[in-house]
Length: 298
Image 1 (spheres, one colour):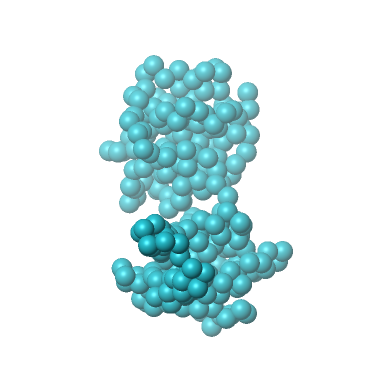
Image 2 (cartoon, rainbow, N blue to C red):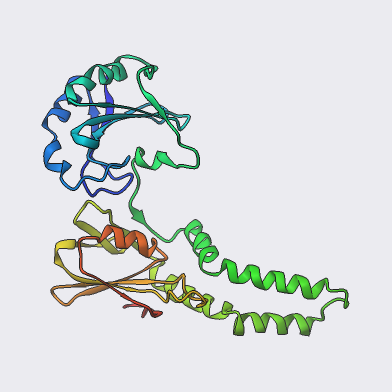
């Protein structure tokens, strides 16, 4: 039987895999035997995203062979019911009969595995291959507006509801217009929309392709993004007005400066600044607590 298998190395982010291909059982065992386990055990922080070889069965059933505590190895089995089972081994060869069972049986036998508590955990992200192409989709715009302006709008809506139903009669058109003006002027609603418009106008036809484990990334026009290398980065500047009471504290721009004096700016409309911080963890980083707007061709 051929099953889809994939590799995960140290410092990969959840859902990041390489060398994804169909393999037989023997080919998978060879992949495990040639993986540089001891080299990747250094500085290991055990989690479900770790140096590993993952076998993917139909209907979102996964068997992941990975590094574990105290020099051991572990098999993680994650099924389509989002149940997680684990079994650890001192020698990797001890796991081979269970991997063989994964290839030979339609239903994987977990009778010798420990069932892990997974309440309120979203473990599927550690097994499913993720797409690290970031563009400005309608869903992304909706989620971004809710994140950056939703609380302000909710506060204003509650305030308006109290006014409308306070028992003093219906609000006139002029009064409603005045309240909306107050919202934009004092609640920060207008500023939020202006900053969002600035970011959207700059980003709408661009694409970002970046993962944590790959030094090569792409940014620019969706049809012809430019190729960059993290090794060429001089520093990364995070512009983020993070004051608690600042109505613009959910907006951020990440400026990447390269050694050849080129720079690019990535608003968090593509992906959160915290995700970018993680993807660029090996690069010198500076945080500036200020709002940054972007020129259209900047």
